[in-house]
Length: 477
Image (tube, helix red, strand yellow):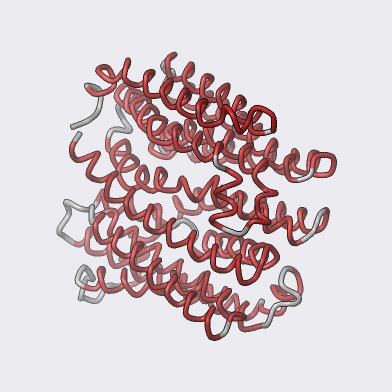
């Protein structure tokens, strides 16, 4: 238990620092550039994620498995695996730069028509830096060097924020470029320093390197196709909002999306660093694997659900504090997205089960369910309901995703969700809907909001206290 909590604490604290500094950057940019600037930043951030997925081909994630498997091998296989991951990541980064520069006119002509070319070049550099650092982080993760990953992410975010703040005071028009370029470059520099002493200082034949890199590439491709599909949908949805509404609404959507998704990113970061390697090691044991999935579901729901409800209550205040007063218009969208995040958080541990069992087809199909349903519902609901329709589309899509991962995992390992977890999720959703109803009623909201907040938190704490003795003894020590 101590090892699990220490790993989660390290990565969780790093994510809190990274998210806090990201919030500060968004706040400064929102005050200086307004909602249109945040909307443009949202487009850049989405295309950045798309580029990293496209050119990184999931090697950073698949490399974790390969390095961990070879960790006890001090011979040729282990050395070639580490060398292949590092050198392959640099090669992929160089390919990203070359292709990006060749496609520069296309990028500007499709998404960024009115943006100066140097900003688009910054985007290309950010993609390449993120691709290379992902491979280096994969090596550190596979070797269990979580403190180095945490320091690289935290100090990278600090450097990126400092540069953004500096440019806002002397050249505001370039601060936008620093907002999405400085941090990836800083992380690249730090991870390069951390992995330098881990580099294998000997020559390898191309056949050796390819033999070690090929499994990472094949597994990464299967993983990245699903992520690429998701990133494409995100780009399409933002373009749809821009066309159906305007760039300001893209900014509101980006602000709500950031809070609903990125601000809970510490959970997925901790799970990727500790939970994923742990269940991968026992993937052959279906009974133990299923038990650990249920344990992890209880843990993440315990951590995330009170945060989600608190954010729902304070949505207008948070939007105004983190961005600007005009962003309060996106509070309703944020509440619906946070409601969907309850289902999203419950789905993650089961999704990792599919990855641990290398169920590539099932993983792809579950991702397909979410992306197709979200895009279809967005197209259907955005017109009549506006941004609120995107929030509803988000929540409904995750309900469908949740059902699909449970179904596939049951077929794969015989997984059965504990009934009390299902009851808890249903209770959380019901209370979340109650928060939404109260928040939209001006007559009772001011009188009952804080009382209901304490009632909700008491209910959740009571549920988990009643089951804590059962929960504690199932955690791996």
